[in-house]
Amino acid sequence: MGMSDGLFRKSALDKLSSPEQLDVMMQVTSPTGWIALGGSGLILLFVVVWSVVGEIGIRVDGQGILIRGASVLDVTSAAEGRLTDVLVKPGDSVKEGQPLARLSQPELALKIENTKEQIRALESQTKESGARGSSLVSQYQAQARELREKVATQQRLVAKGLLTKTTLLTTKQQLASVEQQISQSESSASEQGNRVDNLKRDLKELEAKLAGNTEVESPYSGRVLEIAAEKGSLVSAGARLMTLEPLDAPMETVLYIPASEGKKVRPGMSVRVSPSTVKTEEYGFMIGKVRSVSDFPVSPEGLRRTLHNDTLAQTLMGKSAPVEIVASLIPDPATPSGYRWSSSKGPPTQIFSGTLATGSVVVESRKPISYVLPLVKKSLGG
Image (cartoon, rainbow, N blue to C red; front, side):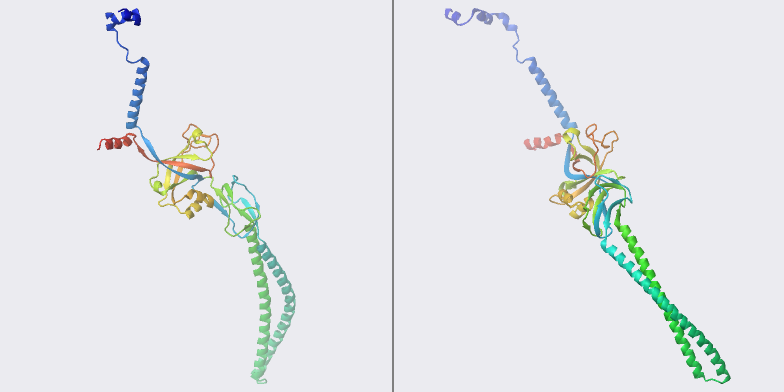
């Protein structure tokens, strides 16, 4: 005991040996631990409930572009010529019939000058020959009058038996020859007049054609998206000069999704569109609905017909023929852009057609627990 008293304090020995300490509960965990345990339980309960009632959207993604009317419109040259002036620039709004560009057509202008020269030469020739022809016709007409009188006199003499019928016949033949010469002279003058009239009609047509082809007018109202030909360049008939978008058509998204995923898309499905000019993490994405899905994957030619841009068509084409998805954006007058966004207002600027975008289509919704059950069955050997 003496040794024990040296090793332990007296107060500690008294506390251990006292029977009054037997009714004191031993502390297993602290209040902080209970709070943490309760929080973990709530989180676990929330996860269980969410796995049963919640949904996870299965999406397919694609690249595309924002376009009004799901396509752009071409303005082409009606004739071959040199582009002397471009009167608009990208972003300008134009009206139907408004001049967009001017062409020079040197070949047509040269043809007009040649036709004018032919008319002047033929009119001069007609004037000179007309004077000579008029004098000649007058002489022939005088001869014809004399011969008619002579025929009438000879007919009376033949009736009286004073002249042979052969002499009368010879006089009639002379009259017919003179009348034929009169007819030929008059016909020649008429033909020259007709030639002048025909050339004048041709000249009017050529001048009208030049006037119509000199100014390229817009066939419809819209907004200029791209100028495809430079000032001073030679263009052929039917060549694309610029592209327009119709202003009266709603903004739509044309997405191109790989065929393996695109066939899962159906009209009416929700679409999330992220324009390339907008920060998605800051403003969210635009909300839309699928309007149509192409029955077959689109070809490069079909893509070019829609976009009218070979480089863009090649970019969106990818490695294989995609399915074309046209989605209508949901309008919202309360936002600066005029369309509904996943955030409250979206970006503080407008969204223009021709903007590249990425899009996601929600093709299926699954409950989270559906992903867990197969794993549980597999682990249990079910």
